[in-house]
Image (tube, rainbow, N blue to C red):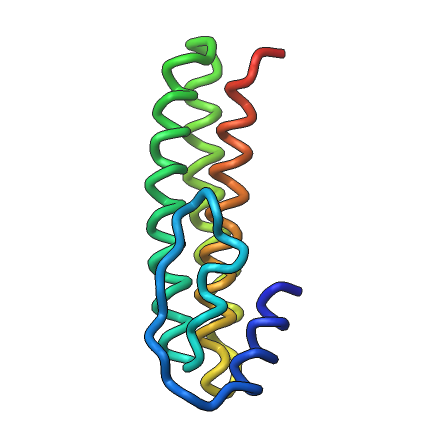
Length: 126
């Protein structure tokens, strides 16, 4: 749904201001200033990289905190999740038209953000 709003914004705007990447702490509006397909996709890509760093840190911290018997299942789950995320986002990138760049980039950003948050929440005391 979020990327549908982004698509509508791209179609409504005509000038080509540069995109600005967001920090993972405030990701909801950071790419709203980008007005071209390439700019929005680049901004979302930068956000996805920032979230990927958070995800990797959360994964490493979680591996340290969990029971030894949980480490391999987490590792296997993470590898499968990466395969799913990549395949899912390729689906959005395979559509017709230039907006596919935004949809694929938003898919990668939002799925990576959600997984980073999930792994961070898994570290919270039960």
